[in-house]
Image (cartoon, helix red, strand yellow):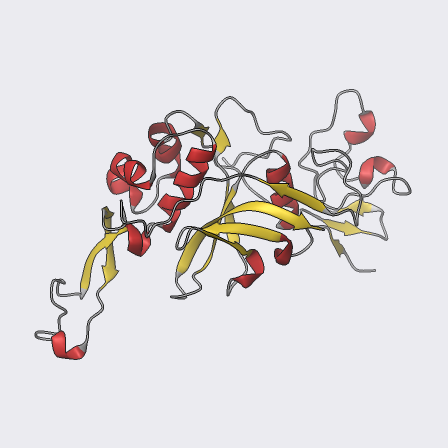
Length: 267
C-alpha cells in the first residue's frame, strides 16, 4: 500500500503510522501526544491530522474537510513606491536594458563593460520589501527605504539575521529553522500569527521573486487556498497564480514570542 501525503509528513495506512517524526513535542498532560509517529493522538476514529503535525494546529480542532479562514493584516509595501524605488540596493548589480541603436561599442549608456548597472529597490528589492512588511506587521515603523539604509550592503544578498537584529526596531528575531512540508507549514504559521516569506517566480520577468503569504481561505489543501502580498505591485494574489510552486519558506518571529510548537533548529 502506498503512502499518503499529509503536507508536513507522509502517512502509511498499512502501518497506521507516520514515516517521520512529529515536530510537535506533545503536551505534558496528554501522554498520547508524546509519541512521534502515531496518527491523530491514536484516535483515528474521532480525530484527523490533516497537517501531519498535530490534530489541533492552534485555533481549535481542525478536522479534515473543515474550511479555514485566517487573514493577517500585513501593511502593504511596494518596491515600486517612488519614495524608495530608485534607492541603491547595496552592491547588487542588474543587467542593463537598452536598444541596439543606443549602444556605444556594444555597451548600453551608463553601464559598465559587462552591461550591468547598480541595482535599485525597484529592480531587486522584493525580499527587502517583503521583510519590511513583516517587520511592520510586528510593530516596526521602518519602511523599505529605512530598512534599506539600515542594511547597507547586506540588503543585496539579504542577511536574515541582521535584518531582524538591527533593522526591525527590536520587533522581530531570526532563528534558522528547518521548515518542512508545504501547506501544513503555512497553516501552522498563520494560525500562530506568523507571516511566511516564500520564493517563487515573477509574473512579469520570470526571475526569482519573494512574496509574503498572509491568508488562507478554504480547506488549505492547495495553493489556490492561500493569498500572498506581492511587493512588485502591493497587491494580494493567490499562490496558484505564480509560474512555479513556492519554495524556500522563511519565517521571522515576533520578539517576545517563542514559536509553539517549536521547530527543530538547524546546526
